[in-house]
Length: 129
Image 1 (tube, rainbow, N blue to C red):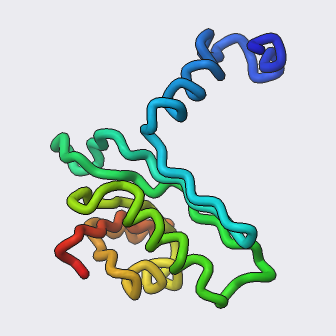
Image 2: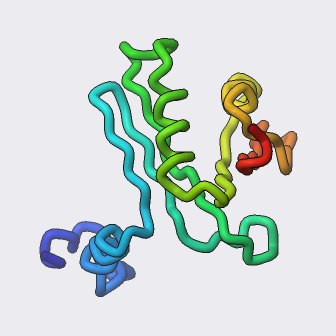
Image 3: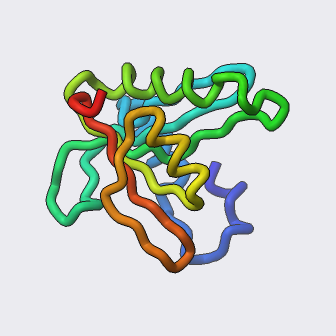
C-alpha cells in the first residue's frame, strides 16, 4: 500500500497509511457522515492550551454547498458532541467572524482570538449548554 504514496516525497512517514488506519480502527476519531456533509473529530489528548486536558478536536466540518442553511452543520455538531463522550470538551479553530458566530450559537466560546488573519480558537464544554 505504501507504494501508492511515493508521490508525496521522501520525507513521508514510513508507517503511512497503516498508522492512520490503526488510529481509525482504535476509535480515536469520531466520524459522522450524512448525505449532506460530514464531521471528523479527534478524540485523543490535545495540548492546545499548553496543559494536557482531555479534549476532542473538531478537525473538519463540511456541509455540501447546496445544503447550506438547512441545519446540517448543527446536526453534525450535535452528533459530534454525543460521539466524543458526555464529559469531554471539544475544541476547534476557525476563521472569520461569521464562522465564529455560527459556533457561538451552538454553544462554543472563544478561548483565543488572533487579529491577524481573524483566527479563533473555540471550546465547547458540556457545562456551556
